Length: 179
Image (spheres, rainbow, N blue to C red):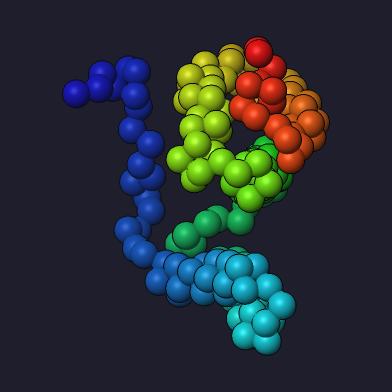
């Protein structure tokens, strides 16, 4: 059991326990609609569900603003550091998701890797993320988020620039920086 001096209680005793059902339904509808639209891009159904997702997102924001116990209190976004950190995180993870998708696609369709070989080729990225996440979090807590959230995306951009060298005749040993 955690010592109370190391892990203080964070519960707000004045808050009435409740579940924001409407907010949860609107958030789910928004995410489902927009995700479907992105997956099925170019089809009439995608346009309709994408618009429904965007309307649900707008309704979610209005609902959260008016709710007595919102699922996502919008006053959190009044803090510039919180908002900036969330925007940078969104952009970094969107870029990382795209990179993982396109690198695996490149390795399989252009260079002829099997799905397993393409997955193994991207394994070092996952291992680095696992090994560096906790120390990075500790560093951010110690020095603040500004430097890590500036330096990290710049390192990521450099890594993506290095990936531009993967061509149709590339092999794992020729694309590896250590080889």
